Length: 115
Image (cartoon, rainbow, N blue to C red; front, side):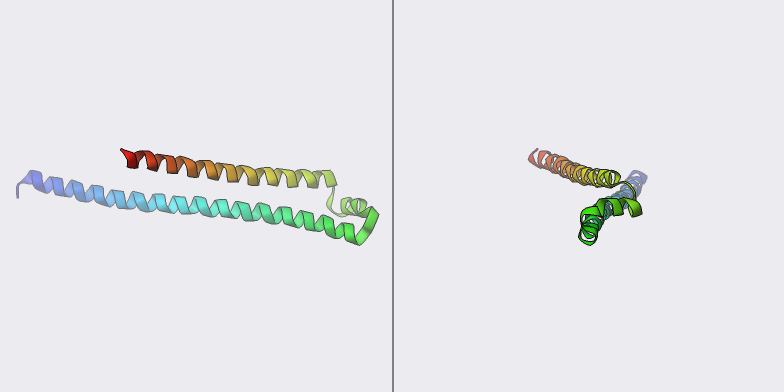
């Protein structure tokens, strides 16, 4: 075997190891992104659910004066509604970005497979 063939084999092996490592790193990064995405949805959903459930329980417990009692314990009701609106907007934006990313990756695959 001549030295050029040996060098070519060594380079091919090095690139194969690099590809495997890069694939593993990208796979781990993708899994971390998906986990963060799911955690964000769960966290925001639980926050919205908790706030709405809290308001409902105050309404049932205190009747007409529930807003005053709520504000006494938890602060401004308008601020609570603003937090809920921000969480809903965040959930919507996370969903839209996820859908956009999915479409971008699907479009790239279909372009590559045609040529």
